[in-house]
Image (cartoon, rainbow, N blue to C red; front, side, top):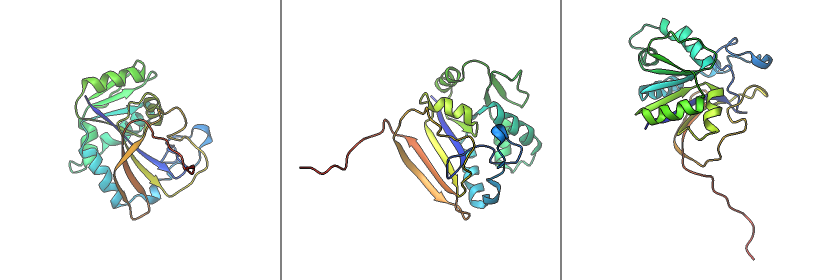
Length: 206
């Protein structure tokens, strides 16, 4: 069975919309696209490389697939780890609107995304990585299909935009398995799902 990991860039107030560029996603009149770029540094690059090094396959939503497919095939430097992994490893694309996927080694998942991913998780081995793909990620979280979260939280507040945890996720306790802070103040934390959340009380005993 594959392990499904989710890597997300998010603001301090949880926004994941359009981190990489002004026109990446203007849904809802979003005007803050590219908010991540001022915080990019070598520390962030090393973490991203470490993540891609462990990938065995990728799972992408439509918008993220289209953004990646328009960019990464043009990066032909054999020493670029992200490009080499994305351009060669299997890519599964969850979409009901795309007619096809032309990027090398890509497969279109046309049916219900939750069912398709659950079956894919049973069939594959190794690490199945989701990058971005916020709509897909929220659907999978609502059905408990994410095994590990890799969250890069940036020191910026936007006040609006699409959020990762926007209701509907299965309640879960998380165990922090790693963490670091970049030179620009980005908090990087990795969590694995550890079961249902615990509960308690601070009431004084009589």
